[in-house]
Structure formats: C-alpha cells, structure tokens
Image (cartoon, rainbow, N blue to C red; front, side, top):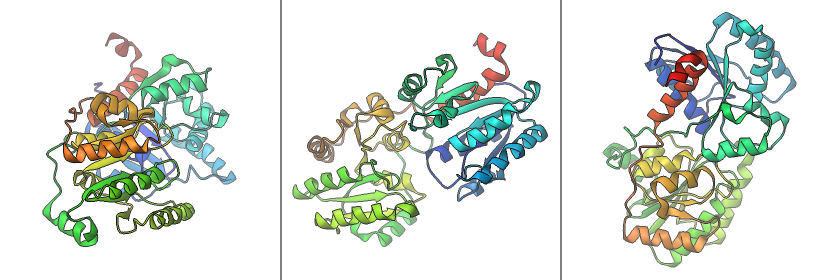
Length: 378
C-alpha cells in the first residue's frame, strides 16, 4: 500500500441501512484504519454515528433527493472538491452520481480527482442508469454484474471494469459465533413463539421479488409435513409500501400460518438471528447483484437455500452447491430443507467473499488510478 495519505469522498443518498450503505461504512472504516481521510456525503440516517465512530467524516447533503432543487448541489460539490482536494470521489448511486459527475466535469482537468463508481444492482437500462459506468474505474460487485454492464452498455470500455465481490467480516461471521445469553433471553422474551423451533429465516427488505410469496408456500409445505419449524421474516417495510406487508399478512392468515410466521421488522442484530436459525433463504425471484446475507449465513455455518440466479448463485456455487434450487421450485426447496434439518450439511469455509478481500481490492483500484505505473508492476 502507498505511504501517501489519500482523501476519499464516497457519495450516496442516505445512510439508513442496506448493502450499499454497509459497504460504504466498511470502506470508510478501512481507510481510516490505514491512516487515510475518509469522507462520506449523504442526507444522513441511522448509520451516521457508526460511520463517525469508525473514523470517517460525514457531510450532510440531500444529494439524492429526486427534485429539481437538487441541481443546486452541482456547484456546491464543485466548490467542495476545490476546497478539500480529494484524491478519489467514489460514486455509489445514480442521482448523486449525476450531480457529482457534472460538478467533476466542470473542473479543469488538472483539478479533477479520480472518479470511481460502483455498479451495485440492475437498473433499468437507459442513459440515466449508464452514469454508474462513468468512473475511470467501474467496480462490479459480481461477475454477473460485469457481464450485465458489458451487455447493457456496449459503449463502456470493459477494460475499466473491476470485479470486487462484496465481503463478509470472517472474524465476526464464523461457525463458532454464538449470541450472548442476554441477547437470547431478550429475543425469547420478545418472540416466545420461536422457542424450541427450527427457525427458517428470510432476511431482506419487504419488497416484491425478494421471495416472500415463495417463502409462504414453502412454510405451508413444511407445516403440512408436521416439522417443528417457525418462519421469520426479518427486514423493514418501506413506509410507502405498507400495503405489501398487508398483502403478505393476508396471505399468511389465509394459509392458516399466522402462528407459524413472525415479522420482526428492522433489526440491527441479523447475525444473531441467522446464527440461531436452522436455514436461511435467499430466494429473490430476480437476479441479485450479490446478496450479502448469503455469504454471511454461510460464513456462520448456516445452510442456505438460494435460487440459482445472479450473485447468489455465484456464492453458492463456491461455498454450498447443495443449497441451490431453480427459481420457483418450491418442492425441491422444501425437500432440501427437510434433508438439512435431519442431516446438517457441511459448508465450505468462506475465504473468497471476505471483507478483507473487498477492502484491499477496492483500495487497489484507488491505487491503480493514483499510481498507474506502480500498479502495472504488480
């Protein structure tokens, strides 16, 4: 690693939770630990305090608001770049990327920091989304995402794309990990219905295509088999999408499963919940760019049933091929859960999708831009 202290600005809409936000904090913490200056620009949110506690600076700006007045941030961000003189600006979301790119483009070339963007997910293919490939280097969070960028945006130079899988903290997420007694007591006090049951957990925000409908169908079959299971739906509901939670609750009630499935809402202790689960499901019905909870659960030694598409398939193929199921194949998924509950399967140790790899590889991309001659020697 270079001895030069870098200043890196990461930009995203807000810091309320989610994979993009988590990755932003992780890179910020890594940079701070290595003695670099880490700055994050966002509208704020529940993760800001953690960001600051871990050594980054936070600059509050509603740079991802979808309204005309957001355009004022173009000149604001331009002034900030001239004032702070960052080495790297790292873009993680479309609207902030447009604002920052236009500000960056308006600077004289000698005053421009290096630009990096991360393609975190499938967006609708159009000029607005193509901004996520505007960086001098474009990070794709899986091989599938790299192929997606190349196919969707033929004008993008494939040579500037770098695949960096999202990573799990394998110091924390280990098969030996156990929640504290205090946590367990609090959990069973809040959710007594889960005691003595094999927990089947589906993590993720309550949005369509995350697989909740298939989860309900699987739970119906497991209960019909008289298995001692309880379903957990772990994740928050977008306030604008409460109707979707209502739909799920009606489906669950209609299937007679109201006592067999629990909604936990947003939780900051997902690693604890997954560690006491018997099975974790990652059954999104559309390809996910990566799907970090898959690697987290497998790193904890918890079997995962995952649909064989997207980044989930990439991870499962490396770590736990036995858990792969074709999209929508409820019968096979049910059968595998039954098998795994009877005979706990062996899961390969995760040395690929690690936080350490992700942080070092991201830093290497920064280094590649700042010291191109050095990176060519590697």
